[in-house]
Image 1 (cartoon, rainbow, N blue to C red):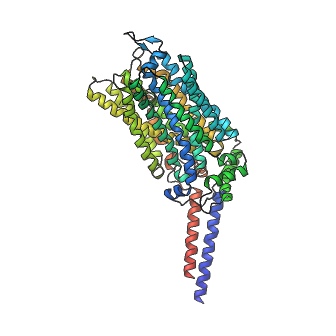
Image 2 (cartoon, rainbow, N blue to C red):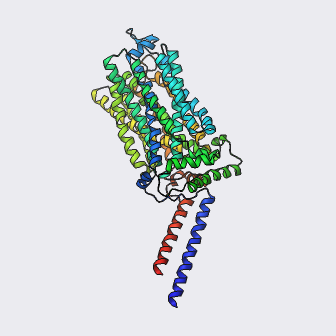
Length: 548
């Protein structure tokens, strides 16, 4: 009799635990956090299960090499002798053809940065209305036109048009790629896949000076051949964009239910026991909750990205990229070859490659570690390191030049570029994962555009800073960025949160509850409480069965 009473008591306790677990799960669902069933998968389990999703993400990031190659080529080719002879409008003191500071402003990074702003602020409307895939096709057409214009250029106004088109295409690529990745990959491995875009970007940046070094050694007068090499990237991008599926999250946002379910099956259908209906319900739950919150706050328009908590999310999404610009990215990345040339170093293309090569290893390590150790500390440390390198390089400009000083310069420049690559990698990831779903493309586009606006300012000023016929600041140019970027380096520790492993709905909860950025990592969301409650209920049921 006592045994029967004990069994009944155990069953009653298990039922009570089940009811409590259900209540916690219902609370999470009410917050837009419906459980997927994959919350307790490890990083490796997630990678194996969602292999098709991972493949699509890796394919779209491969296009980042074209982005980096265009940026790298734009900054390096202005030091190529054949290019200078073709586009020069002035001469040096000894009568050699030269690019004036004004011309460098026009055909250098300024026009490209202006194009990036145009692409980042206009393309989101196209992507929001017609989908992410249409956005990829549109930017591809623009990039193809830019390379065609470069090939046909005979004077600097032609080149300026090419750079404007290139900027529009590259700017669109820079915000749309992380947005797309964030929407089709699971949160557990989102960081690694977003960082892979920056790895391909770094590879593209590295390949540009290497290609120029090789071709320059064969025929310094032939500036067309380096331009022609861009067609290989353009062709590869088209193949990739044709293969990509549309984003299921976009389908949910525009209420294309059947198309969204078909896309989920295409992307994740190989996962054993994958329930398309349940996973579609998870996406809808997040999207509908955001709509309800927006309606309650009299919001719902794209201009919400400039108001309240959405404004904070826009600022955070932009922080690393904009901070990098304020810390002198343009000097030691975009104009690296010209910078080394103006401070008296030889083999500038080789030096550019040497200082950029470590980026590949650093970003690769970041891919492996970012989901385990998070973004916040790494991002803040990288911005702080860039700030310190600015000071160090500036000090080198005050001492007599020697082989030791030049060696230290190359070391600090390599350190700076590695730190910048980390900050940029995480920054591009933030474009995709920090915004709310309803405003993802608009937030990503405008957040990236803020950085590009500063890029325009830098691309106007840097040629004057470095040109021996203008301000001729040389190494001391980085003192300017040491002062200008202090707020971003120090402020990052108080602004940047930790989004690693969080779903969009979990991030929504933390921003809605005004959680401090430095407390994101330790904050327990409704999803985590629901997972814990279900685990306890399962353990209790197993215990009850054992007792029986």
